[in-house]
Image 1: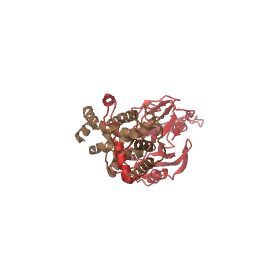
Image 2: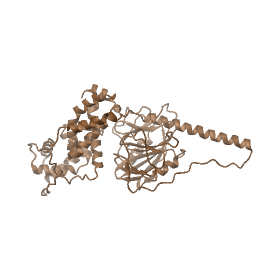
Image 3: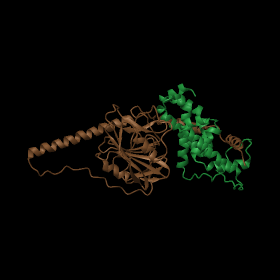
Image 4: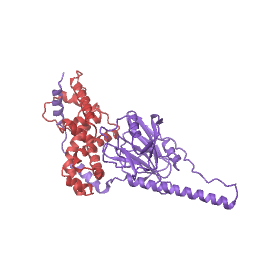
Length: 181
Length: 289
């Protein structure tokens, strides 16, 4: 990330912030969608995160840490969005029909089980899984992004992956799919 | 049974599915809002300085009243002096059954709140509803630093804070530079212990307290006047300071466990001139895990 742009945006340069938003928007939205598993909630969380980034930029002491800091604000926005949406019940909506299915090694059954297991996790646990397994962050980088000790990250990841493995190993028949939208 | 390697591979493959691009309409919506969205400069210090000036005004005013009474007594020579009116505590409004309005955020400019109306803090990790009397304004800084400011006579006269404190500054005299790593633990006792060992403060022995049925600890924190600091700012999130105490001043902290979420409610010194008004708002607070 161009730290000069960050510094200019910190000083209130709206054009510089627009460039930052364009550069960071895709990855923030992708991460939000993977944490929340809902396209509408992800859009709201991304929008809120971008506004928070603009609002709080002057308080970022080290512009070089913009990327990690932006993920922290995004995770907070995801947390707030999940909380604000009182009708959002993790586990009820199993598949987003607007989610393109890539050709992957995860079978349909695996995806269903993963979806079910993932939705049982808290936002904190989901964030660790997404940053580590989607963005390929090291545990130290995840800790830096989320502002928690690396031991906490390790513990959250262990707990989350244990839950996902249990979901994959579950013998129960897949529940009927519910359509998200 | 899946091996760890299998699970990691399947999860990574699954993670690759899903949206990867920010919709144009969303980016446009954000950029449209930027001109009307003020950036937040670190401003708590200025607000606290305002608080100090107000306290000084109270002190000067009280001194003037006492002096006038003494002079009046001497001049009149009569012992039958009617006591000066004292601040009448605002009756506690009925606890809200449900919040009517969600406060704006940010609201640093101080949105006026309607007396007798129940409000709900926005984006706070714990649901907080409360009812205010007259002359209260919202002045929140961020989701983790929600503030209600009291303006009894047009001037700022103190604030009621609802904070998520996850760390304390190593050096409250030079906040924002160094935070303990690992940070303060998650329990009420962890934060009480961290606060009790802060340098530059006198901290009372914590006592049990509760707000809306949720238990915790109450302690008062007085900032030393010997530190040479303009302000002592120990309360922090993971990466920034969210408030402090002026030298010579005292804050009351209620550190509560709301079903696993730790919140801190700050209020002015109990001997503060408008303590009754703050207690009245506190009496209406409802917490929802």
